[in-house]
Length: 155
Image (cartoon, rainbow, N blue to C red; front, side, top):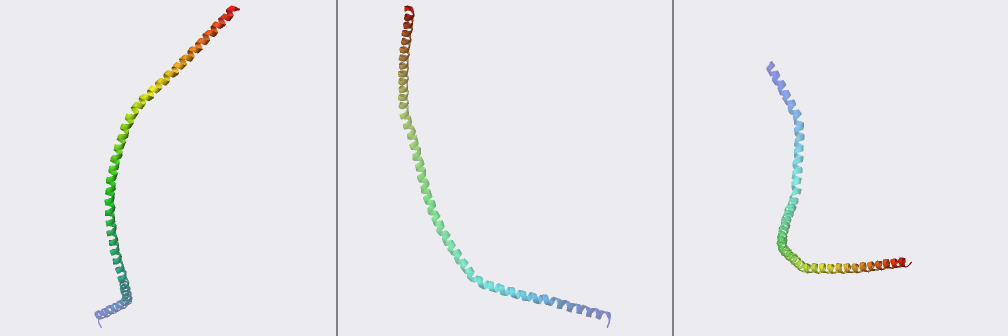
């Protein structure tokens, strides 16, 4: 045998060893792939009813959302009416406030004049009483002084 054939035999032997070494992980990988395929098929069988229930739940949620939307439309309509009533109430309360201001001004002006007049009369009456009291005190003091002078002159 020549050198080229020996090298070919060695290369063929190495290739067989490589194939044998790779065969074991490839077989294990095949078993893993088979197990994963079975798990996926089992999961698919179990998820079909679940997906049906999810679909039914989504339909129910959409129905509920439609009802909520209809209810919200009704609420918005009622809120618009309440806004209108509130606007009218604010207008009426502004008118009442203006009327109260006018009535207060009309009633207050004469009352202020009456109060001022009453105060002036009371002040004048007090001043007159005080003036009378002062006059009486002065007269009495004068009489005492005169009596004191007469008493000194008689002694």
